[in-house]
Each structure stands twice: as C-alpha cells, then as structure tokens.
Length: 108
Length: 186
Image (cartoon, rainbow over all chains, first blue to last red; front, side, top):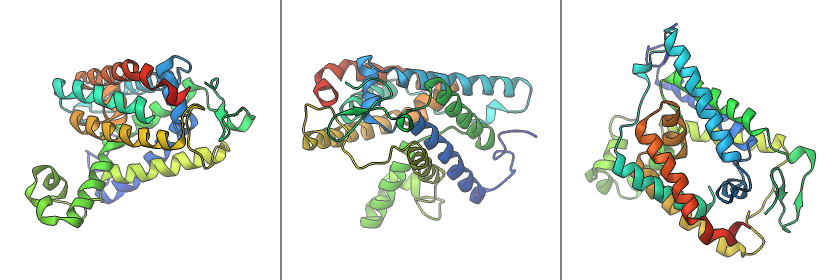
C-alpha cells in the first residue's frame, strides 16, 4: 500500500481530523513521559544539568529519519509527497533566536 | 536545581517517588520518533503545535473584527476554503496533545496544581516571565513558519535545511540568554 495514505486518497478530510486527534494523543503522551511537561526540566537543558531535551529530541529525529529513509528506499513511502516547509534562512534564523529567547525566559 | 527525575513541589522540596519518575529519554525519543513517522506515513506531514495557535488567533479576530480579518492576507489565508477556522488538522492535533499529555501525567502521578519555578523568584515574576516568553515564542514561531515541533522535530527528521538552521538558532538563543534568567530556574 502506497504512503502517505492521505495523499493517495485512502481517506478524506473528516477522517484526517480523527487521525490528527489520535496522533496528537501519542505525541502528547511521549512528550509528557519524557518530562517535557515540566518547564524546569526543559530549562535545565540550557544549564547542562539535565540533557533530556537533547536526548529525546535527537533520538526522535533519528528514529523518524531512519524510518523515512527505509520506507522510501523499499518504495512504500513516496517522499516527494511528504510536506516540506520552504526554506527562508533569514526568517528562520531570526525566528529561531527569538524563539530560543522565549524558550528560556518562558520555560517551554 | 533538582537532579534529573526529581520533581520540585510547591514548597521547593524535591521528591522522587517511583511513580513520578520520567521515562528513559532514549526510549521516549524512540516513541516520539515513531509517532512522528506515523504522521509522515499516514498523512504525509509532520507534527506541529504553533499552527493551532494561529488558527485560534484567526478565529478570534474573525469573530471580533470580521472586516479586518477579510482585509488581511494572513488571516484570509486561514479563512478561505474552510468551513470554520478551527476545523483544521493542527487544531485537532493540539487537542490530542492535551489529552495524551494529561493521560501520561495522570498515569505517572504528576497531576497537581503548581507554578513551576526555582526557589529564588516569586510566582508573580515567574508568571510575568512566562507571559513575556510566550510572546517571544509566538513571534519567533510565526517568523520561522514553525516551532520546535513543526520545524525542529518534523523538518529536522526530513533533513530540511531551514529547519536545521532554525533548530540550531533556537538552542543558540536559549544558551545565550540562559545565564541572565538563571534565577528563575535555579
């Protein structure tokens, strides 16, 4: 079966909202499990006292990346159809710095 | 600063009962990565959190000042071709995130009313800083077209160049300012 399933018309918009809700539950569950519900734990990353943000984030990125690569390689997933945000380096660099400031000031 | 896996209580006294301990970060990372992968495979898109807040803002502006919303390109982009500004994929995702986070917190015995902060600042200061930080995060996420979820996590897994630039700058910004707000946390 070809993926992304939604892009191949396996289900419509209404079902996609249910999918969003279900995926959101999984997302929120693992974020909280990892301790990302705690502003102090998140902030601790920036004082090198708790590196959980790095560990969780880069493990997640590598896990998903490997999955994308192998599913694309064996032809199950058409990577051309996976949405990519456009690259606007100046905006993304400035936005990243501002968000980083907000992260350590606000805690999330 | 509390050691890893310790949860500060309202009194500032850390406690580590077995139930409140967090999951191994690498295991949680694999779980998170698989959820992200599922989103790519099922939907052809990654996860995002800030987009839902854009929808909320558009909904609020459209309710209070519909003429202004229609005259503005940004708001109109969210309003055209949809039944309702809140009937968006990312809004449903956000509702799921709230439910999933609550379930995990409840299972871990971590649900309690508290203002999380270091012992050296008042709750009022902490809330003001949280508010100010929130504004910066909103501006930064809108400027970069995404936040730590949509850009750093999802775009990062796709090796999207702009997403990696964004992610590195988020950490750079956080580390650059951390010293000046250390009293809030430690």
